[in-house]
Length: 249
Image (cartoon, rainbow, N blue to C red; front, side, top):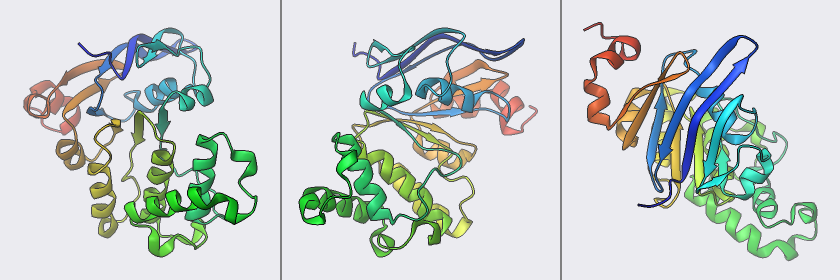
């Protein structure tokens, strides 16, 4: 049996007397398309912040490819192959998509401090960045300031930046959130076409996206792991329908 790409063991997060994450144990296999869903206040974003090191768990463990990373920094987790996107974009508005992607590539190579050296010295990085712009349908806007891009393009750029880090595990926090309906199909198509060798954990409210993307779904409710199974199992689960899908049956 292969080592899980990402695992939590009895993960707990307390804020004073409030338990936000309550003994959550997840096992995510390599290459999985795993969705994490639940109603507002279920604790999904807290889980992501624990996984990435933005928050420290009150108890429990986090393992990345079998290695305990519970006490490591966010930066160290990125170096070990864990990347994420955010519900609200975290982008450099004055940089172009090409510049931002080149910066991510240089950081991955440990050359971030040399990003602004002569362009001729960054030929390989520029070629890689340009290829990512093509792949993420950003080639036509890659030389424009990021702040001028439509929101859907900004969401695509954030995913491109995460992929530029060559992650083994990618956490997507509501990638379609706030994207106008006419642009959503482009974002959803990119999400579905992410590299098969990258393990993807998707946090999402859009059930059409979840059901078309995921091969396994974990449902959180009130900070606990409420249910887990295949798309078919979750879609037929009456308890999940009652608390999340809006069906009281």
